[in-house]
Image (cartoon, rainbow, N blue to C red; front, side):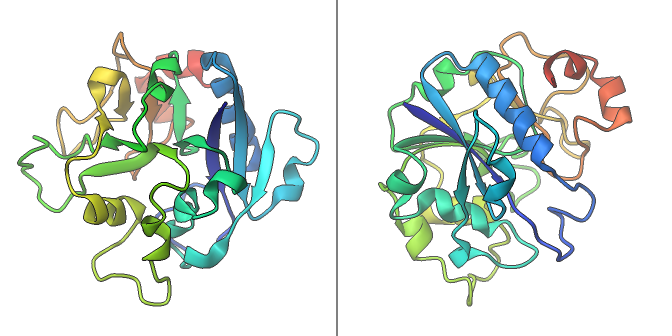
Length: 242
């Protein structure tokens, strides 16, 4: 059984994660429908949330109350719960974590078939990846993660929300610092893409959807899939975001 998990929480503190884009329970439901359409292996969909009661009547969504131990206002470190020492009991044994700003465009079976304890998405905005022209970008992007829960609890236990490490601005930097550049990974060859960054040519999708595409994420400030200018420039969105 695969668990597909996403995070939805409320934070009134302005940040890059909530200042412009206010996600709702319907965004969780939209992602659940997309996953159901494109994942044929037995699975369940989990929403990790501080408002589990919202999904009480959603038969296709199991709501898991958030453990806020790693939460820092105006950040997204709450997502470290994926690495909770009791994650197998709380979330599931094998978990595909996907951010809400994602559009599923192809079959996910090959994505979840990997057997390593942790598979990550190599950060496509590191161009070229081994020696980026814009240094400082982390090795990985945290929008898509496959994890066998309980196997790497240090991601959770070594993070002190009262004294966050200097220079660690989000979970993907923390993960990059913890594990270095050699984790098992996906990249564009596996069909995982992002909306292209204007400041990093070749970093993602713009206009035409690659034939092998399975997942397209919309992280950062480049725009989200529901924005008119993004939807107009990427007409494939209308077909898949439903």
